[in-house]
Image (cartoon, rainbow, N blue to C red; front, side, top):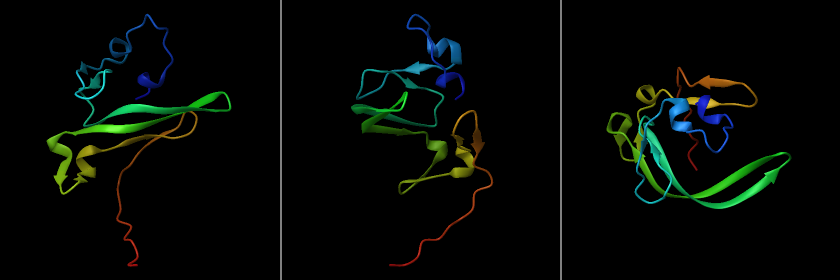
Length: 106
């Protein structure tokens, strides 16, 4: 994840630099990352400047979920997925251990 967040000149192949494998997407032109257990194919909706950075908004066209992290009924196996989250600045975190947070009945 760290390698893919870096800014590379246009002539540098980011897949090579990050040692990831591109595979063809089904609904959009940019490739999907083979090693990603969950991948979203998105169509750009808008780019909003926020200070010196940008917020990119998109419409999800397709979601690919590997069988080993899919429990069925639109649920993922969090223990198998072992998600990594990028926080602010140079900080990241692993979401382990997970814990339930029941919703209140309406």
